[in-house]
Length: 334
Image (cartoon, rainbow, N blue to C red; front, side):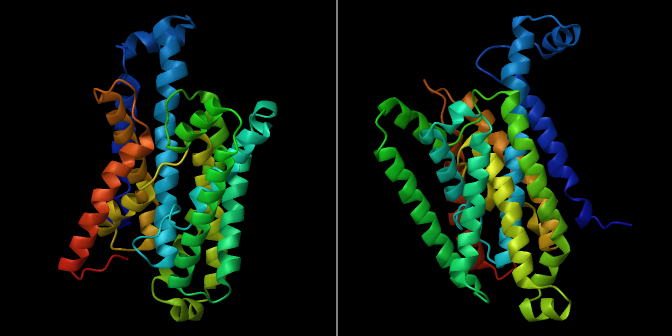
């Protein structure tokens, strides 16, 4: 029989599904969900049916998909590096994925082949992850990986800024800048279909590493004694993270802090086991992303706030709270 800790992922998963339903209902204009669903099922091209199918439903689905990818990737990175501040953004995966997407924008590949955007984002994430482990070298410590990750993050950010600075079209510059701040607005079911295979493939790779991440939490020497090679785990976790985050970044832009907050929100309820945190963090990431996306639509602003801005406004205070919490208590994080 599974323990309560192993079933805790059900709660954030159910909550995420409920919030997805709320996301479908919430919007600048009123929408009768029953009427829109009835028209959709009857094949009537009414305004409510089109709003539901083309605007509200893709946004809710992407909130689930992107949030789950970021939450699970953040949990995997924290488990791999055994550091509470590790996340794809800190290690440069998100920045490299964004750089790949920006290159696809400015090279014109997106206009020729729509699938070039997620492919470029995933390629950027994979190359950034590969550079991280090659640069850090074999047997690198956690501190070394974090330092190299910060360097790669800075280099990818500088390269993105350089590309934007050379843009001959100011309108394209602003378009990419807003895209980089993250948003789920104006997305369609095509975006969902583009991101879905990448996120699922990355999530499967990460989920397969859950037992090995548990072994790594006991220390590298103990993991080796149990037959777990830390270098192999790092490569598979890096690849899974790059695929999941690359697919998410390709359709939503860079959404920070979700991968950092989600694992901390569920970790106390799963016995601080990295492997058990993965699925629960996916649900928590979806919950956080959907809450933030609903919030940006409800704020009384003239223009809808970017989703990445909202998650940063929540995530930055959380970092401060985490620092105070760790200073006052010596409870384990992993």
